[in-house]
Amino acid sequence: MAHTLAAVASFSPSAVRRRLSSQVTNVISSRSSVSFHSQSFVSISSRPSQLRFKICCSATEAAQAKKETVDKVCLIVKKQLAVPDGTPVTAESKFSELGADSLDTVEIVMGLEEEFNITVDETSAQDIATVQDAANLIEKLVTEKTA
Image 1 (cartoon, rainbow, N blue to C red):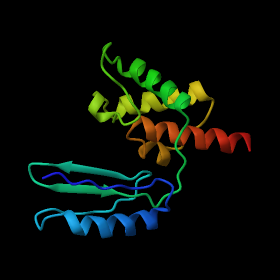
Image 2: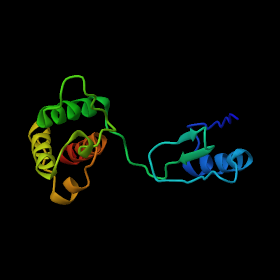
Image 3: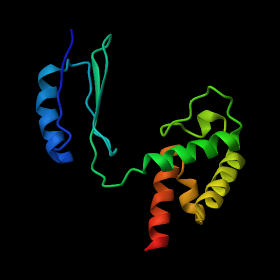
């Protein structure tokens, strides 16, 4: 049995939650679950064989990094980790899934500091797990530096 849910991206996060919540209760079986997470997007995923839905709705206002920044971080990560050609590195790529250990992560941060002429404090560096995390932090630090 297929279910269709629609969400309009221009709604505020709380409005999307209310709208989706009312629609979801009408279509989800008792074995399914609904959860709301603090992400910067709304997503709906389904496992048809189990009729499970996952809905994520943003409550944060964190800005997403520009595509150019993400692309540059991807290149630096590929170089630092010697990622084989053909292995995709995207904004969602986790350093650990690319084979990075703690020393590799420190080297990635050092490469990013050099490339973007920024300084990343230790606490912020420990919060970086994905390419997107790194790109967002870089843009924040660059903006603060030029302000």
